[in-house]
Structure formats: structure tokens, C-alpha cells
Length: 509
Image (cartoon, rainbow, N blue to C red; front, side, top):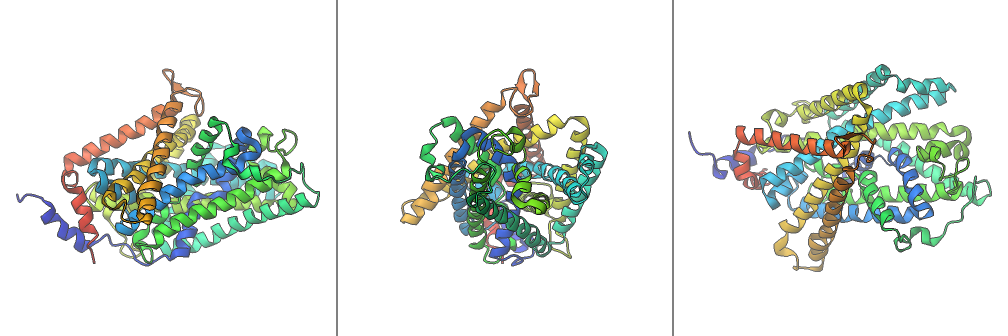
């Protein structure tokens, strides 16, 4: 049998391409899909309360602190996308920078985190679906239907199936649906912020708290614990913007628009977060009584707690917005794992089935349906067996996210090492910003690992005195190593020539 070398494989890789529908999404569409994946409405309604509980009125400053590493990493992603516009993103770029083993693990981190987080999005969509119905029909008992495991799982599977079908039909259908869902949540969130501030200035606030400039000054946050908490929360409230890169081969001007869309997605999300947080604090204050932001009941779901006082009879709009936000995130999140699996399969780092493309819609249908099935089965089984394991698994994904973000950011630095000082732009975008972002996220990776050892971390469950979140995180890593070993034994060519294969893929017509 002839020896397999880059010389024999590269021409085929360059000639075949991946088969996706190019030029399906413009810059605006990419930003919309990016925002939908971040899901600002449902993300912030859950995250705002815990932030306020730690830093009070300095919440906007904490959001700014958390925003910075995300922006730094996004700028680094943009540089790599310009040089290597491959929808394998973290997998492909880490392979080029650090070799196939690190690249494969970076790809695994992305796939594992996005596939499993689908169950979180679907579960939240179920809760808000029945909450919306309860408000629409003025029947609180309807909201309790989501607590019934059979109804919950059946509804979750319906949402998952619908999202998979939309993804299967391609980026055109995806962006049309996202225009509606994202547009609605942005309108409601903006309306919430403006209405709350207007009522506060008119003397109609629950506990009027005048805006102060030091709310926005990160230097006023003197607690290192609060800063660390803010950085950790940034992983969850901004995560998802990199979906714009995984669809780069389907985007107009693939070398420019996906990276620009990533940076703009982070910026747009940041503006929404600051507006909503400032409006909430100004209107409700940080006290513990009533709808004050210091009330533990309010902190569990800020927007729905404040919506009746802010919107009055139209408060159902907020439930609809959060439902649309979680449903939009569920659908758009499917883009990342399916495209990453496609790229990994295309270069021989995953079974060849994942490289199959729908002849009609030119989408990676095997990856789409595999992702939705795995996530659905996981959610259904865990919902019946142990909800602690379900939610601790979601918490453990923070470990995976920090891992692949930091690896990708550092890949920027190493890949462009010969051009660091060629210009001021190169120094900032190829060295300083991704290096700082990568180090911060790498530090968060180890900090989260350390914290998760504590049995009180997450749900409070443990295995032999070790926190369940840590055990699950290590299990996900361990499973990845086993899958990588299986691929290595079956198809060792990628682990010998991975970087050459990816470079060859950039020469496709």
C-alpha cells in the first residue's frame, strides 16, 4: 500500500472543499446569529442578580471587566480568520499553531461544550414557554407544567427537533428565523431599559437610585473576589459570539466579515447588558425588600420580577422575549458543533460520516442531527435520573469553554510570532490583545478547576468528597482523550500531517 503523506492527501483536500453553501450570510446576518447564540435576554435575567449580590451598584463596572477579555480574544480570532478562514476555527487554528493533538483537544472542547449546552437552552425554553402561557391565560397553574418530568422532556424534545430542522434547512432559513427572534428580544430589552429609566426620572420607580459615574469605573471595584467573579461570569454571559467564525465558509467575504461580526456581537451584547443593568438598579435599587435587586427571589429571574412594575399590563412581553432568546440560542448554537465536526471529519480527525453534506440544503446534516440527538438523550436521561448531574454538567462546561478559548487565543500569538513587530496593528492584534485574553482565560480555567474541587461548588453534590462539577469536567476531558485515541488508531494520518492538511484546505478553489 502506498504511503500516505501530505503530498498524496493535500491535492484531494484542496480540490474537494467541504461542500457548504458559500455567501449565504452577510455581515448583518452574522451579527444577528452571533447575538442570538449569546442570548442576552435569558442570559442576563439569570446572571444579573448574582452579580448585583456581590458588587451592588458597581455591576456595570463588573460587566466592563468581563467584557474586556472577550473582546481581546475576539480580536485575536479575527486575525486568524483573516489568515485562515476555516470553519474548524479553534480546532484548525490550534492545529496550525501547536500541532494536531492540541488542535484536536481544542476542537473537542468546543464540540463538547456546545453540544451539552443545547440541553440547557432547551430546558430554559421549556420553563419560559409554560410561564408565557400562564401569563397569557392568567392561569399560574400552567407554569407548573414544566415541573412534570414527562411534559418537560416531551416539550424539550419538540424544541430540540424544531431547532435541528431549521438548522438542517441551511443558513438562509436560520438567519430569517433569527431576525425575528433576535429582533424581538432586542426591542423588548431596549424598551425595558428606556421605560425603567423614564419611570425612574418621573418619580415612578420602586426605589429610585440615581446613576453615578463610579458605577462604570472598574477601578472602584476593590474586591479581588468580585473581580474574579465578574471575569468568571463573563464566560457565560458573553459566550457564543464565536459562532460567527464557525460559519465563515458560508459568509460573504469570509476573510473579513466573520471576525468583524464577532467583535461587533460582543459590543452589541455589552451595550444591551449595560443598559439593562443600569436601568434595573436605577428603577429597583439594591435593597432586599419587594422587587429590590438585593432580594434573593428577584435575583433568580430579574427581568420577570421587574417586568410587571416596568411594563404594567404588557409585562408578558418580557416572558416572550426570554422565550425567544432561549429558543434562538438553541437553534443558532447548533451551528458551531456541526461545522466543527464537519471540519474535523474533513481533515481526518473525526469519522468520515460527519463530513457528509445535505445535497439539497448543503448543510452538515449528520453533525446537526447527531448534536441534537446526543443533547436530547442526555437531557432526558438526566432529567429523570439526577437534575443535580444535569445542572452540574452545564456548570462544568465553563471549564471546557475557558480551555478552548484560551488555547485559541494563544494560538493567535504563536501562529503570528514572526510578524509581532511588523507594525503597531500587528503588535496589538497578534501579540498583546490575544496574549492578555489568553492568559486571563487560562487563569480562569485553572481557577474554575480549583474551585470545582469544593463539594459546595455547583449543586453541592460530590463524589468521595470531590465536587461533582470537577468530576464531570474531568470525565468530559477523559472521554475526549478516549475518542482521540480511537481516531488515532483508526486514522493516524491527521496526527502525522494535520497542519499540512489544513494548509492544503486553504488552497481550495
